Length: 124
Length: 516
Image 1 (cartoon, rainbow over the protein chains, first blue to last red):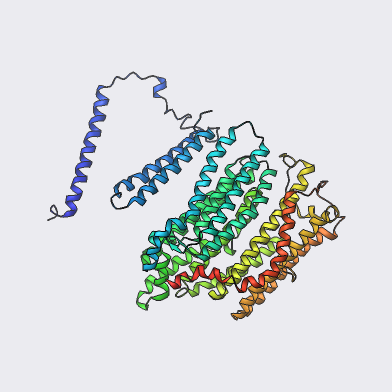
Image 2 (cartoon, each protein chain N blue to C red; image 1 turned 60 degrees about the horizontal axis):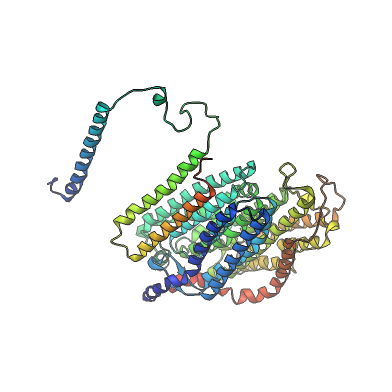
């Protein structure tokens, strides 16, 4: 009864996908761990190269540039967030939706040109 | 119903001005990024170029609205356009044009050199233009956020000044908390009645009041409306939420303070009127909030103005107390007294812009001799600095006296008329105690305005804080000031025709809900 219901039919695919993802990722992890060549040094073992130490005194001078770039990333990530539901529902919205999306991309492009010209993307 | 949907074909034509305006803002942004790097122009001429671009864009926008007055509803009924909204939009543009002159002067005097200021200003104007014609709570929320985001950046515009940064961060934190509450109110309302469209809500609440069996839903929707109204009162800076106004407005640069004090007021009152109209049936008990908050705002604003030492602080406090008047009428009377609310707000906007112009002119007088642009010598202008102004410049002192007498509400000026209409409406709707209270609190306001005039004219020999000398060459700002004072005088003569006749157009803005 439960297995024949619409609910289980829909969710079985998702469950299969989840199991497959888990399998694939663990496979890649194990294989890469097994077959890769390992010769560590001090530079490689140090903390990730984000510009400053992760554990130190909070009252230090740091570069605001990292945050600026992160915010720019955020803006262009929002574009993707907007794109996915638009693609899925494209069959239901008429050509108005197409023009709205074109307008959106155009305005985003203007923002990109502005950021480029002002020099927000340059690293000094 | 059918007529509106057939009108929906006209939708793109009715919103041509907004589309044009957006395109212009983007083009201006791109053009000025190129202009910014060029070596051919000096700082002064670059500033002048950006100012004239902004001015021309707004003028063209005004004539576009003049040409395209179409009654139309957008698809999904989220925007609408009719004579009333077009008139309101025109008024917003006219006030933006008036305010642009002191804004640009203050911007130049503070030697800020980011052209993004004008872009942000135009975006906030765009948001308020769209807010006037929006009829869905979701678009209202989005546009309020759009305006607020522009304002946060404008408040923090002078990055190296610590007061400015404090003001911007405070504004941002208050604003974000408040928009959370607004969204909570909208979601509760949606949960209770299942729609956020103002048309559907007006049909629901005006035509079909809830039966007693649905008292639970009724309670939730009343609570949601309460939250929404409180947020709008916060944005207006009314009584329980007046604390942020002084800190934020005084900390931010003058050019931004002028924008904050004139632009959102008209739009927010329009929004409040729409909402109070829709929820007038079951929610009439909520109106006591307006009465209480307005009355206390008037009194508290007056006391704050008495306490103030700096001119900027004084102007902000007096504007807080003036906002209280239309809020009182919102709580006390019927829709028929719309004209008095609009009349008072328009007078408030005119006198507010004029007050800031006077402040910027004084700033200009000081900066000529004392190199105010230098960060060390920069200090706020105190009220005592006005004390010798009559000796140095009689014309300026005269203009100042006319403006402050008008704001105090003395008979020959239009400020008297606006307060008179408010009190008259209150008396007509038999709110005697409220009108007595307002009368006595306006006596307070007469006190502090007249004190300022006494300082300017009769305290010639009072000791000054620093030995600062004036240079009173007539500037363009000053000519503008004199012209507007004349307008203020003439406004009194024409206003009687105004509020009898053409103010009814505003009511068309609201009665759209009844004709649906």
